[in-house]
Amino acid sequence: IIYNWCDEQGLTQAKPAKLEYQQIMKNKFNIVFAGNMGKAQALDSILDVAKKVQHIQDIQFVFVGGGTETERLKQRLITENISNTVFIPRMPMAEVGGVLELSNLLLVHLKKDPLFEITVPSKTQAYMAMGKPILMAVAGDAADLIQSAECGYVAISEDVASIQTAILKIYHLSASKQLQMGLNARNYYLRELSLESGVEQFVRVFKKVQHD
Image 1 (cartoon, rainbow, N blue to C red):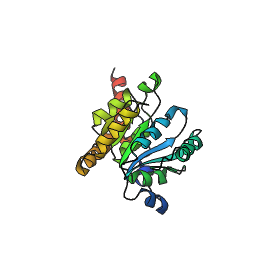
Image 2: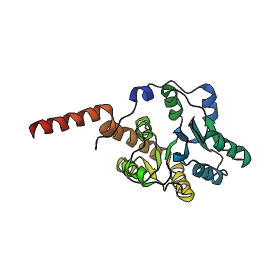
Image 3: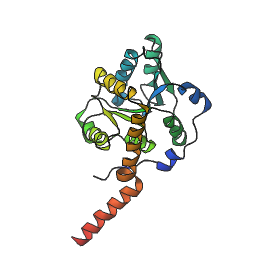
Image 4: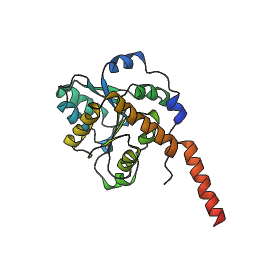
């Protein structure tokens, strides 16, 4: 498999997050979801998890981006008094990296669908490049990737109990173990998923074809 890579330069040379976002995320265990917020992302499950962990003062869910479901999800915060979740509007990739840098855990979530089991959501590579622990709530190839890299935990999509358990496992890890997960993510990205790695793999394939 030759995976897609991400905008490495845009992420790793990102501007620091705006001061207001730095304040929002200060002194919190920030679980960040960045990207499209539509039907396929099934983010109601994540808000259900957020409600269940509100008693843990420093856990905070941060949604970065927008989509067809954003306004409805934001309305849920008000009607259900979900106080540990914030929404940050869409921003250029160079600024997204600054917000991801402030995260403690990066979240990938898609609704249960056999089609998603044979894909790796594009944000996965970006998350790994940032060198942060990852919670992968997508079955199949994407989950296998996280387990191979030893850079986070896997949960069952749309399963509130499973996602909550995985989050708390990472939350309760020591700082050094969380850091190691992030390093594993970054190192695996550079070794297997980066632009440089992808080009090398293409070259090997072409050479093999020529020799055959």
